[in-house]
Amino acid sequence: MALAAVLGLMLAGCGYRPLYGTSSGSSTPGVVQKLADISIEEQRTRAGQLVRNDLVSTMGGGGSRYVLKMIINEGHFGVASINNTTVTRQRYTMNVGYQLLDTSSGKQVAGGRSFSTVDYDEIKEPVADLQAAENARERAAREVSQDLRTRLSAFFASHNS
Image (tube, rainbow, N blue to C red):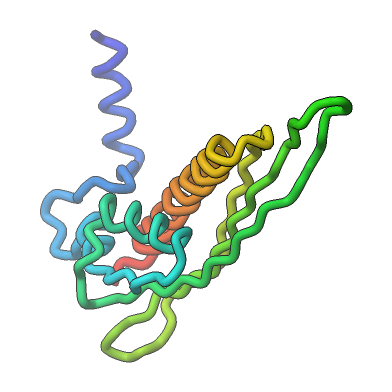
């Protein structure tokens, strides 16, 4: 108990701020409010929809001050196969280029790239192979959306405007 009190006092004096927390007495919106002020552009591909849906569910995605645009590329590649079997190791890759635009000026305020690579087994059973590939896509989309949210949060935390 005493250790917790000492740690609390040390953190209070060091200027530590939680990334998603709010500062008492501050008039500037916190990271959470800024993330909620981002509108996320509709996507035309299934991979894009998965990334967008995850971002909307974690950030809000209904704001009007910023718009997030993404270009998503994906691919499946055979990595290895086991002799005398029908099992093939596949690799699914998702690459995302993103731009965060200020809607009032139309200028890009942040941007970059993110990616995810997920392996899965293909066993030459059509339904199981489709499910394994879709599961890999969903895992990659979740990883990419978490990375994008962290990148945008870090941007807003370092730009207090």
